[in-house]
Length: 341
Ligand code: PEP
Ligand code: MN
Image (cartoon, rainbow, N blue to C red; front, side, top):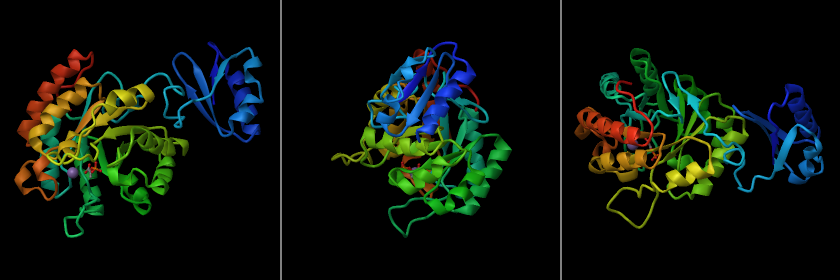
């Protein structure tokens, strides 16, 4: 249930409602917006109804959240969630570019990529240190050494870094180095891991599972938010369909759907969504046109030498060209994309 407080509500009045809910054993989440305050009551609906909170003059209305996801839903929070990163704001007017190699391979490779994507306008550096590879014989990532390289390149370039955590045991380690913690598609429904991330004070980039419905994806976000971490960034990265020409089928229709259902920022990963660098620019343009808050693109200085996902990686030159195109589309949609990251 959500309790919408009336305009001009005083702090002690909010506290009174919070205390009543807590006394009844309900979880409470407070959302103080620019225009109104909403108290989210987590637990038995019946217990909230029986309180007749609407009788209080400073309570405007008490609403059930009709969606199975509560904290994630627009019913819970009407205005878009906006997250401040070290150098930019995600979910606002600016379209954010996240770019970098699939995997961290060396300091030289990472720094070269970071400098080139920053010059093209990227605000966030991506790079995997723990890689979820289909084959156990493929490169598995540099692990902790990769995290250290990410931190070093972040310090040299000022770009915040996003990197994947694969299991509960390494959450603390990854969080020590990452600015944004990524949950890969394969782990979207790893509920123990999601719970762990709910306790983290870091934004989480939650990728859509390989065969997850929009509802399952949003329920995964609800796991993180219900644990207390409300900074969840949703990332559409394509789903499995019967089509094999592309690596996945990039479901861009999920962007307006999720924007309608949820207040959380949504970004699109056209690299894993298509699996081929040739289709990345078109799908990136489409993602921005569809209203995505950003795109995450794999870039490698020499894709033919990449240890992971070279076929879908853009060269720095191609990425710079793409950023230029996206800038025009962002502006056409009433947004903007900066020139240098
Ligand atoms: C990645 O971003 O490196 C990755 C492994 O993506 P996904 O989880 O979407 O496959
Ligand atoms: Mn990859």
